[in-house]
Length: 109
Image (cartoon, rainbow, N blue to C red; front, side):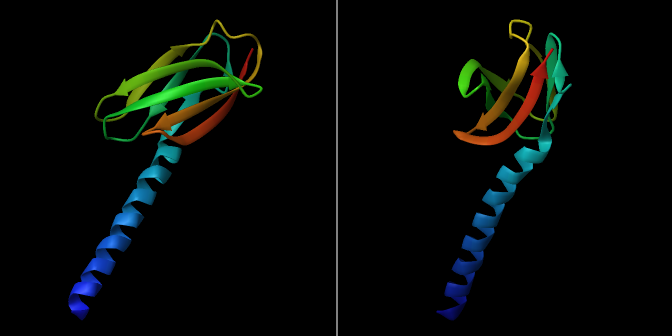
C-alpha cells in the first residue's frame, strides 16, 4: 500500500511540475523585434510544439487589434503589419490555451 501511495505522489508531483514548466517556457521563447516599430514587427516563437497563438495589441487598456496565428511544429517567425497604429506606447499580449503567457511593451514611432 505504501508503494502505491508513493507512486501516486510521484506521478502527481511530476504532472504538476511538467505543467508549470510549459507555461514558463512560453515566456522565454516568445519575442518581438524591434521594440520601436515603424510599420511592422517580427514575432518569434522558439518553442517546438504546434499551437494556436492569439495576440492582442492594446493601448491604455483598450484592445486595438486581435489576431490568431496557427503555429506549426518547430520555431517560427511571423511578420505582422502595424502600420495602421497611431504613434505611441502599446502592449502586445500572447494567449495560448486561454492563458496569457507573455506581455511585451513596444513603441510605435
